Length: 349
Image (cartoon, rainbow, N blue to C red; front, side, top):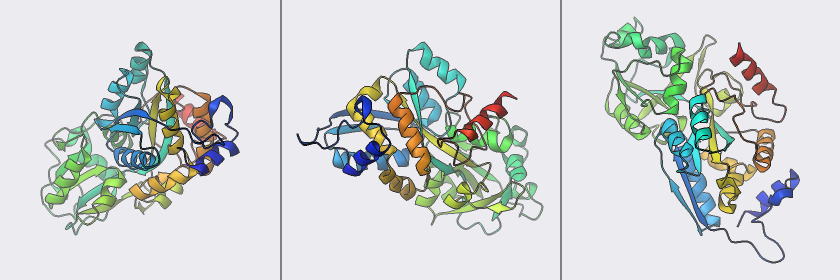
């Protein structure tokens, strides 16, 4: 059964038409949801997907979930082949993936659900790194650094001449796509001589075990292991900023603040259990799960807008299907759409 407060929320935004209140309590008794929802994709979104599915299942025990992660790219591959109902993504869908979905007659509804402050981390015992500039991160990770930038002293003269040991996502990861665009300047452009995995827990374990290590992943993974890791502030030219809800909201944690998404198979969205689950993700009450795992909820206006788009079955990407896009503000998905218009215009130039 959908929570009564969610039903009231749907009523408030006038979505009762086209069956928007299906699953809410009525004088005839509640509808009982059942079925199975399949989800795959981003390791960054995975902790949130687990929290959401567990909370939804608690009120709807007859609905089963199969939740996995194979990276954003791997999730889109399965999604566009019609193998899963929902793809979790830590970047927007790109043009190649959109064409793959189109070729397989898979329509999709893009649902932004939260923001992440993508985090750079070092070993908890690291005493010399507190903040890194974007230029220093680029010097570490650009393709030209492979086999050449191998010590911390080469990154900054005041750092010790200790080995630089890097851990990061693999190439199927949306976090890899986003980080390379934001830091190196070109998506998927990175040195390849680092320890890589689509499983962020592997990265976490690697950094926690190696005193000279550095890695990057979604903030939720730092928060869950903050006793074993040290998060590093990032200076984009306007001073050092730590990843947090506040720096995402005020725009100071750029370029590593980014939106997270669900992509819902258009045909699957017609199934009551899938529809109810997506509504649950967009309900004001559910922002608690976003906050608890370490991400930043969408503003109330954006939740209303995205719920309305979902109920109308609006397909395609609001960000143009270009893949990773940097500089997206927290208000990018609210009802006035001005921020999205700005992004679209910048992409065309």
